[in-house]
Length: 237
Image (cartoon, rainbow, N blue to C red):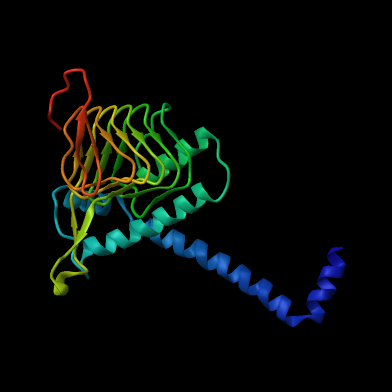
């Protein structure tokens, strides 16, 4: 069989060239991956995260924007591995540890696919469940408290573009914090700077632009309080 394939390649130069091109592409991809990894050293990452957590601007053409682009490429590589085939729960936790750069608790569970263009500013508590199709834009920081539930297709966005056209490519980070035991319903969108209080519920499809008090249910566009959950929860984030 191998001899026949070799003879076919010799008779068909295009097939041989395609094989060589595929091999070259694979080698180039590995080389590019190594170059990206080398550029994301601990100090650069630390400086970048400190800038993002302080609300600093990632202006176009700056070191912080370059770092953001490098982290995006690394995140795309890891999420492609995560989403392209079946993984056991243990393997998912290993991949999420690589993606976030932080230990993931054994009680964490997730149904892929999962998408992010950074990963390194996600912090996940214990007993957290993330359902399939979620999108985390975490450059500004995403903190998920113990026991939180994140429904199908939830988007957590921590970046704004500049409003003025001349600053449209500048990025302004604001963190999202989700309290313990909170439940974010399917296809909800949480915008930059929002805090979700402990045990709060965000209804499916809501767009949350303001803080949600502990023990309340919000829904709609924009999200507003629907009711309070009995139990004496404090109205604080």
